[in-house]
Image (cartoon, rainbow, N blue to C red; front, top):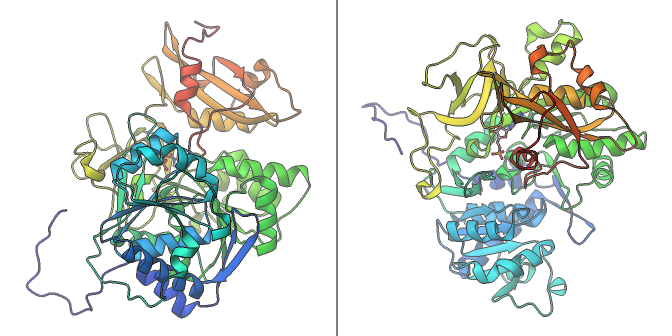
Length: 550
Ligand code: AMP
């Protein structure tokens, strides 16, 4: 950590560390009756308040203390979005231990690798993941006990898991008297491993300070814009970059929170949106696909849903238009990554855009947006030279800020910064108003005849076709051009379109030489653990594909 010089004249403000426990203290004190609603793994709807959550988080902190957990110990979770997971967010981090959220969709081998790498001491899990725990328990060398997030009567009768405990029993035995300890705000608070499409996953280790600053910034009106009048439903999982910080920003602002649990299908989500009068939600595009398909097929409308943040991968313009025009939902396109807690940019218009024609507004909103205060960004060429913000020059995107990693947990991967900037691995353009547009992951970019073709644009055009549900574009070897684009398409149920029609669909929308050379139809696209399309898997499948032009 860099040490800065001290001025001979220091300010006279209270020295109060920015700690996660202060968020739940605030929510309890100022929004004691605000609700937390959860669809549970058990299937029913659970409801209680911020005051209840605070009380149970303190009971958990006492239970952890009794188990011998000390500051800095890693406590893992394998859980859906729900109130018990939220109690872990506060009970674990608030007491000075480190909450390690593991993505349950990872292969069990990777779960064990991550738990061992993190040296987790205890692991809390939803009963859905009992089979995963049974598969990995014997391989997790540092874990002293597994805590099932359920009541006693839901505990498995004949489990072979050593030291299996019942969460409800554990906390029921504890007092709710607990003073949240004060400590250095730079202490680690939570740990999230990157998806790791190449090599082993690496840990982003957040601090209390970084989490609090990110919570302040992400709640701003041009970012997530969360307020005490909102009902927030995070579809983005609490095991993926702390549900984009929402479990923290709702406590900061006093918004009501609604957790969807394991039921992420369109019907279940829609019902919860309507029952709880959800105003704001956040998730990756693939989730909205399910919800919009359900709503569209059943000719439904939203009665309270006003705004959504879409990120994690590019939001297809067609999806944005449907949400905006058919359902009156404002879409804020956002970009970030695990290493950035995750928020980097969000896209909203400026006052001067107010009177622009609709197509120009839409074109602006399709970008990933402007940096939120705290994050600085730049694009550079392969020699590290900074490139202009002219809306057309592509470069490698670098970022810095107080909620951006300065290296990975246990220094995995070595020194990752480039002159103090974090290389994101994304390729982007930035326009003269500071709007970022991601054109690709650098490893997904198609290199055709020495020029780059960004696949996001090509995919966005494909999914704008009425017969296309999902599309992914990959580079396939070409004897003359090195690589040329191949479009892999999943059709909408009951819809039809030919290769030729799809290729024709690109005409006039893009430079001719960017047009895909061929189209293949697939039943489904492979999705990774965070709901993103796995391009590397698709590349493997079509590695030997012969393009008609080759
Ligand atoms: P993760 O760390 O798993 O959240 O992945 C971060 C990566 O997702 C980024 O580096 C981008 O490549 C991609 N990503 C996130 N948000 C967007 C977005 N709005 N548009 C395009 N790509 C995105």
